[in-house]
Length: 281
Image 1 (cartoon, rainbow, N blue to C red):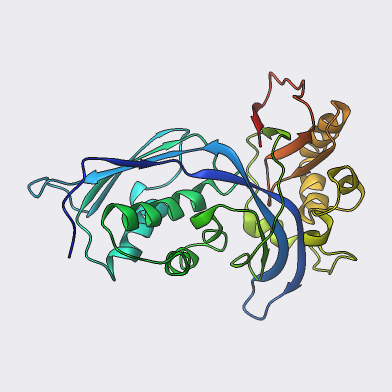
Image 2: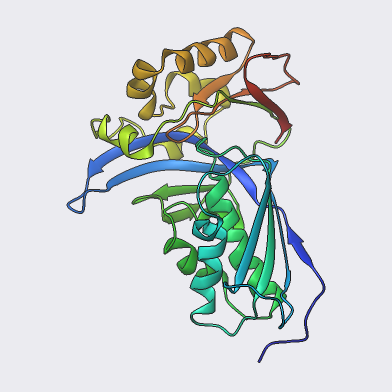
């Protein structure tokens, strides 16, 4: 039974960075098994939903409007809408209007779309008192993308498989500063995976991130960087500049093309060419 309607409900999907990313083997199904650490960062979208009036002439039960950073494709193909329909297949939820304001860049390796997907699932659960557990919401999220389940709780996690097998870790970077650089260079995920030669690292990234951040530069690796930087040297130049500006650690997030640097103190990093964000973790 659906509880009485609310007026509007809003949530703020967060972004993530990858601390290490190792492609360890190619699977028989054509996907790749990986090992990585997902870490949340306070770069956000905004997702608002409200019930749709019974007389509103919409052809869809989830009417989505997107503002902010442009998102390619039909809005009905957006993960927010797909998440709504995944939940609605098994739960009684009314038609809704949804407004997604994008602050997280797309195709950036920061999981913005996956975070929006998980946010819709958790927002529906809360708004309509569906009673889903965290595990149930993660199962819905996993149907829509490998890293979607991480954003249901958004807590630091070591991920295996294709990114869906999560293990919470006690990593805390509170007080560190991060600069995110988004050069706007599209790096298709399929292409990035095709160029990587799977191999197991000498040390697991989950173990490395529990060491002092000062040790990460020589040990914590993103396997996508070698092939992606060879095709897009500009990205390697950005990483070098982050280090030149004093970053303790710098890397590409996911398959790119965003890069990030970590500083103990508030950094001095400016770019007139690329979009950047300076956030405190």
